[in-house]
Structures are given as C-alpha cells and as structure tokens.
Amino acid sequence: MLQEIKAIISKDLRMEWRQKHALGSIFLYVIASIFVAYMGFKQIVDVPTWNALFWIIVLFAAFNAAARSFSVESSGRRLYLFTLARPESVIIGKMLYNAFLLLVMVFASFAAYALMLGTGPLENANWGSVALALTLGAVGLGFTLTLVSALAAQTDNNLGLMAVLGLPVILPMLLILIRFSKNAIDGIAWSQNGAYAWQLLAISVMSLGLSYILFPYLWRE
Amino acid sequence: MSKYWWKILSALLVLTTLIFGLRAPLAPGVPMVSPDKINNGVTSVTITGYNTHFTENPDKVVVWLTNGDATFCPYELAVIDDTHLRVTFSITEKIADSFFDLYVNTPKDGTMYLPSAFLQSKLEVSLQPDRTENCAVNLSADPGGFNYPNQPILNETIRNIFYHVPTWFAMLFVMSISLVFSIMNLGTSKTKYDIAAESAAHVGLLFAFIGLATGSVWARFTWGAWWVSDPRLNGAAIAVLIYLAYFILKSSVNDKEKAARLGAVYNIFAFMMMIVFVMVLPRMTDSLHPGVGGNPAFSQYDLDDNMRMIFYPAVIGWIGMAVWIFQIKYRMGKLKFKQLMHEQI
Image (cartoon, chains in turn orange, brown):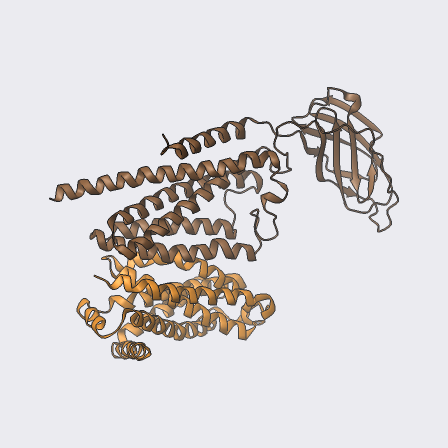
C-alpha cells in the first residue's frame, strides 16, 4: 500500500511538473488575488482584517487547486488507475499530494501577501505558531477538499458543485484556523493558543479517516 | 390502534405543551426600576411590577435592597397601582458592593427579586461596610401556584424554551436517522434506504428552519439582534448549508443510484464535520448561548420544576412529530419511486 501511495504521489508530481500551465495557473491565481487585494487596500494595518483576507484568498486558491485533483484524470485513465491501485491508496495519495501542493502554495502566498499588503501586523508575531498555522491550514484544507473534489468530479458541474459542497464542510475548520492564525500573529503564547492547533489537527485526522472509509464507495461504478 | 399510539401521544403532547406553555401565567416579578441609580442621600425610585398585585393589601408590601450582607429598607413607600410602587431610600453609609439587589414581597405574589437593580452613585464602596443588619421583617410566604419563573431580560420569552429547544433536538434526531440510513445505503445500495435518508434530511431541514426562526426572534428580544456571531449560531447556519448542499448534489446527478451513493458519502462526511463543530467547539469558546462557554445551561437555574413539567413532554412530543412527518415523507417518496418505475416499464 505504501508503495502504491508513493507511486501515485510521484505520478501526480511528475504530471504537474510536465503540465506547467496547471501549476502556474494556481500560483498566478493567488498572485492575482493578492494584487487585487493590494489595489483595493494598499496597506492593511488591522490584524483581524489582514489575517482574514489572507485566509480567504488561500481558501479560494485551495478550492481551485483541489478541484483539479480528480477532474484532470480522464475517465479512461481513472479506470486504469483503478486496476493498478486500491482506492484507499488512491485517496491517501491524492490527499498527501494536495496537502503538499497547498503547503508550498500557502507559504509562497504568505510571503507575497506580506510583501504586498504590509508587514506591520506581523511585528509581534509568534513565528512558530504562525508557521504551524500555515502548515495545519494547508494540510487541513488539502485533506478536506480532496474528498469533496472526488465527489464533485463525479457530477457534470464540477467547479460549481465543488464550492457548494466544499464551503459548508470547510467552514468549521476555517473559523478555527482564522482564530488560531490571528492569535499567532498577535503573538499570543502557545499555552493560550495551543488548543486551536489540536482542534485543527483533530479535524484533519478525522477528515483523513473518513475519506479512507468513504472513498472506496465513490469508485464503485 | 396499537401501531399509532406514539403518533397520538406526540400530537397530544405537542397540543398540551402549546396550551400550557402559552396559557400558564408568568410568575409576578419586578422587571424594571427607574431611575436605576441609588444616590448618596435621598433617592426616590419607581418600581414597575409585572403580573403583580400591589393594591391588594397595600400595607403588607415590603421592599428592601441588599448590598453584600447589608439590607436597606425604604423610609417611604407608596402604592400607586397594581404594578407601580413609589419608594424612597436614604443611604449615606459605606457599602460593600457597587450594585444593589432589589426585593419586593407581597402576600399575593411572594418574594420577587431583581439582581443588580441599582448602581450606586457617589456612595463609598469599602471592604468594611457600615451596616450588616437585616431590616426586612414580616415577610409573607410564597403563595405557589403554576407559573413560570420571571427572569430579568427573558421575561415572557422564557416560554420559547418549550418550542425553540425541542425543535433543535428534533432536528438532531432526524438528522441522525438520515445519517444511519445513509450508512445503510452505502452498505447495501438499496433504493429505499436512500429515499429514507433524503426524507429524513428534508424533515431535519424543516426543523432547522423552525429552530432558526424561533431562535432569531428570541435573540432579538434578549440580545437585541436578529443574529449574533456565536459558535452555536454559526454551527446551526453551517448545518443548514450542509443539507442544502446535500440536496443540490443529489439533484445534480441524473443516475439515481449514483446520486444515492454520492449523497450518502457527502451526508456522512458533512455530518461528522458538523457534529465536531456544533458539539465540541462551542464548549471551548465564549458564547452568549445558554449551555455554552461561561453561560450555565437552562437546567441550572432557569428551568424550575414547573418548566420541566412542560419542557420534557415538549421534547418527546416534537421528536415524535418529526418522526411522524419523516414517516409520511418516506412513504410518499417510496410511492413516487414506484410510480416512476411503472412509467419506465
């Protein structure tokens, strides 16, 4: 199984690397959104606004990134994938790949965002917690949205349904994430803020477990 | 007959809770005072009662304030009408606490209480207050009778407990039914389980809307806004969004069996995510909602024995009604499905 997961991740990575337009489009999407925010706000001094806007931009980019994870595969290739690997390996592989992709994207866009919209709010930041928030956010978004993407890929209206199905599921996590990251940026100590991190981790693990159990039913045609 | 007993029971329970919940009076209380400050020296205040009977036995009306261990009695008290008292206090001593609690006692109404009724103004607050004796004497006993507690801020809206809270219980109950049928559908791929899951989700959504409406009206009267940002309320909104998305997902796929499978997967996934949010998170953060954060649940002080007598039957009755509606909806769904099959053949 580990072998299968590894193979799927490396296949996705290689595919992504060869079709550079796909990877590029996600990054361009983030950069463009940040630039739009910059045009609108110039500089944001207020920490809650700064933080919330960042996660909203990341959220929509994550939707875009995750939506592709199943729809990029043609139905023939999907079937072929199935004869090669167990569905559990497919979903775990896709989830880990999405988490990795979002991790790179989140850190890159955080740097770009801070550069464009001002580093003022970050003065007191608790950097360890901020890094943890970005990591947990990327992993949580990647994990949760992968199963939603698998669901949406089975319908005709992939992108529209992705948002409809994904938003209510992701909202609880997003609310915790925004609070955790705001506290981290405000420089609140780990002892006060750690509970949110554990909640995020718990939601990610639950999402992983549920996807592992439920995904095989999605493949059965 | 033996098969329908629970339907009759829940209909009767709902009917009784509607009648008793709306008809039984609120206990007498003193919800309002004006002005709400006690000055250094002489202060005259008007006390407004609710459901009170000041004019029966005006001589036996006793009013007093408490502040820490001390009690202050008025030197002048005039009964204006059944619901208004004019009281004059004279206070110059050092006191223990910034707020005075108000008590009013009459033979017909018993003892009524308004916590933090008055804010002190220009009095000296000290750790060694001057007075500690008790001047409230000759009190009449509580007359009893069937009524609901008169809570400050809540007032008459306390009755909403009988309708708002059971609605959410009923919603969670049918949503759980929907979850169970979704799991069964994934296990067996039988269409009837899918119809059952969808019917239950429909009924759950109906109750969620009722719960939102009753809660919103209640919030307007107690917190002053139709909607406040609060973990419990956000959770309720997310629950509604999840089930709306569930219906959209099911209707967007033409193949019935596939729609059932996708719907079941989404139902299980979304329900679990929602439960974590609705059940776990609000307990860890601050909230205005009772039973959450620092606020005690109803059972601790709001729900007295009279309210319990209506509240528990209301919960059972509304859950029974929800299951009944679900059953009808499920049978309708099955018939529709059969008709569809017939037409295709």
